[in-house]
Image 1 (cartoon, rainbow, N blue to C red):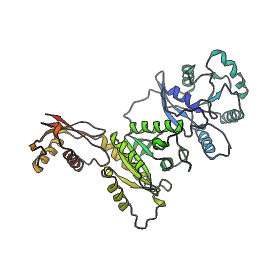
Image 2 (cartoon, helix red, strand yellow):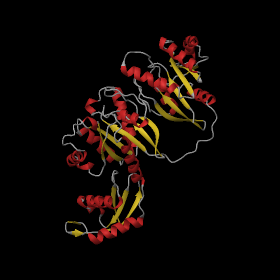
Image 3 (cartoon, helix red, strand yellow):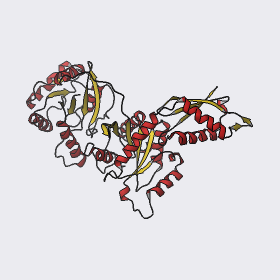
Length: 434
């Protein structure tokens, strides 16, 4: 599958063009420069062919600002990965020194490229782009990412520049594992540690990550998609528009994932905001793993992992049925163990239990436990099935489904977890009149 990278200086409309070509608002877009920082990958399909489209941050070499220099380094890395470069420039501002630097770098690289003059909303505005012939990159293609002008022609041009491939075989999607948490919890450091390279921008400044970044990976022959997300802030602290849309992308990633890894700062401890993120994951039916990051920075005087985990579970009861792992993204301690657990949880979440096994469980339960009562009336569960998985959903048939006591629902969940090992995944228990 071909890889097409969109490159250029800040605020020329790269992310807007990226969203236009893939047909969805995947990249965060705002009017001020420097919003995009990490490489953002997405699948783009046109005329029956699929390729990978990459959005990059604005290229500003040797700026002297840490974040900007890290973003420029990410751009330089993607230049060597792409099969085709889309060099985007701004018709309204004309050529700049940074455009000339990027053009020279692209020419020296020798990779296929196309010069894209953006913000040309009408045919008569194409004259504004003639100045870009001075970049010596050939005839430009005039587009408007904001309204879609010439986007179809651009996609046709991309296909002609990419090598022909056989039809893409559609396989079952691998599990999606999202890394979530508050800002500056080490999410991007954790992702880079797993990859063994600086794939996403990392700094000590909270809020460095803004887009949700999908990364295809493999562990012991088991493929999965790892999603690095922006930090989830409390609503009262979301002041800028960029923060709002970053949080929105993070929530969307949570809704689409199979397992959520919620990273918590070991030094600060588990906070109410951390718990709210984990509660939301459980409410959405996602598998959950709590990762206590920066464990290498904690003084171990009496603070063992088991004791700390017990304190967290006693304080936040809903975490009783979910793994708590103590790790260090910086050193790599137990980083891959978290992924192994996440893959196991994803498998449990998708596992289906046969009707026979479920009713053997129910028969034994009825024989060894007194049936529930309400207002002096006794009733039994007569039959159960598993209508769906992901998350596991068990349907019990009874004479009075609305009268099932809350405590008996909790009792059923505990017994189901003991019998079928649902550690790490939520369970949905439903009742229906027989």
